[in-house]
Image (cartoon, rainbow, N blue to C red; front, top):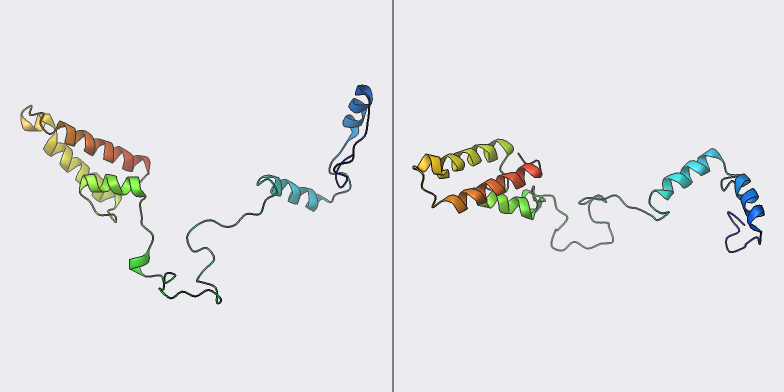
Length: 146
């Protein structure tokens, strides 16, 4: 039967169903603000949402004990700059987690120049290592770390 009458039904023949549906307006009687709010909530399936990210709520609430000072914002507790895959790629390149884009690019070029067969008189013994380095650099490029 419509909004606010869920579970109640009309019994129409097919012709009357078409006639009813042609004139039916679910939002009839709702203000513009109510319609906009309904549409906004429809994006999330009318379920509640919360802000995402680390420590969005701020420091621990007064009722919550923090005996190990996990909420403290110190350099030691800061979130890692890169994900696990990117950190592995940085490790392959021989760089720290806090390496910047310029440093990554310089290190990549240095390793490629040193390990490329053309630079070693055709020696292909470092080919696997070179392939690892190229793949690691491509991973970092895909994460826009470079």
